[in-house]
Length: 323
Image (cartoon, rainbow, N blue to C red; front, side, top):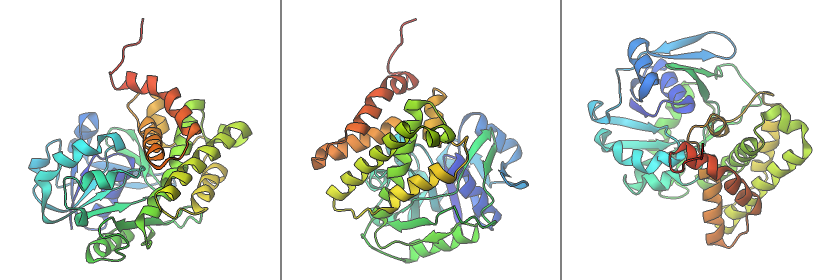
């Protein structure tokens, strides 16, 4: 396949590099020092277990019009950047192109479907990405080494609902499995998105508020309880929309807290703590909007949103702090 990665962060960048390693044509749309490093020396993947490889894309650019038409666009930007990015990627989209969203929220595929026909939007609740450790380099798991603590990654499309293994989904599934991912096709991809969103957003929000990594949150029971309450509120919002999220989302939260590295902070919280624009407030704001629309109270997520909003507005340059 001809694949374009739009936003080569930890997840999308590692997906593109691994798909390149599996034999697919790769183009990367990035910016800044990360782009310069990729243009000069390729995209390096360093495995946490040791070793790695360097992907050399056909083109690395900040201009989607220089890529040409592709079979698959992997949209790797942050959740709050999706509407703008969906319009910007159109020069790469032909009649057979599929656009894959991998954001940790639940609104991205529908935002893309406002620009691209909904039946051509694929979404994945991907597990097993990585983090950009320096320009042009991502540190990630070696997915070819079995890890019983790493869940499968659900994949599907939003239109028609419960589409199952369509030709489009099957092609992407096969490619990702060749690249090392364990892919599952759920009956309803919306359930999978919310199952991931609930623990991810709850962890990110509480980690950002507490300014603490996983090892600290694991020990401080009050913070851990706050995280679970935030996740339970998100599950309640999903239920109010008729999305049958089960206990899996809360079990995933416990799995992350109990088994992942003591130093782990997910990317949304990490961006926030570094003073960069992040997805944390977007996550909590999404829960508030959807909760209000469904008549579901979300006091913990409302607290997280209110507590983090000033710092997020500062990072976005929308508010000035007095000297």
